[in-house]
Image 1 (cartoon, one colour):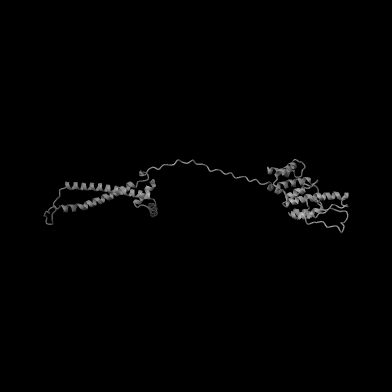
Image 2 (cartoon, helix red, strand yellow; image 1 turned 90 degrees about the vertical axis):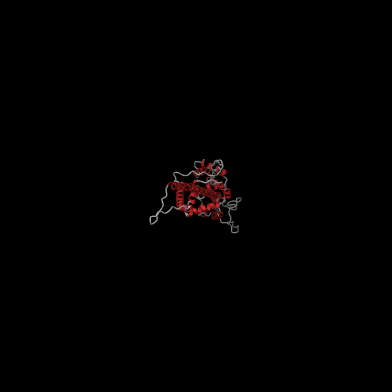
Length: 336
């Protein structure tokens, strides 16, 4: 049998004395329908009150009846007189005597019942300072030992480290720092690269031809200009003519070839083709070798190959006069 609290017994007492509100009464009656132990406890409490009232009422009635009998035995009855002054005999019929005492007995019993009911009500409805001690007719329920509380396991949030590709990407669109001015033949390709159109720059770079000392013969085949230069072919297609190998044009063509190789590698890199960029940038000679090393390092990082990329960056940061020395040191700090 389940145990009940003092609040439960206070509610039972109020219910048996019809002192609950309508909503409280409905809630308690709902418990009576659903909780058999609670309903049995209410019936036991009701029978306890009724038995106690009956016992006290019987004792009070017997005491009042005994008192009335004592008063009747001690008093001497006087004979009543009629209108003419004659003395009337006292009634001797025992039944008449019983009838004369019945209203008194009933009144006394009613008064005693009312007084007793009020006393019981006040004894049960004690103040909050003197709450009744309720003896519960239930067996103690065994208590389970408290389980040790364990703190929830803390899950560590993994630190997301940017890839080498993401860390090096901001440097790709910087204007290259070159020694000297680029040849005029590359101006349109460089403008396309500055306008973030590396594919157009590659097309324009593939059409650049070396300078010649005499016009091309009319029957000579036209060079292909629609595709980029293959890695295993000279940058300028066919071998230079005999006039182009003169001392005057050799230096110009070498300079043009160097700048064209560099911008071709840079265009490949910005076009998302770092592997092709590396193949071309590795062929770049002075005076653009230092800039080619920087963009070669970025190409390795774009390929997620940090080891060769860091080797080049360390070489650049160790060179005091390298144009990309500060950038290399900054990028190395980010990659650590």
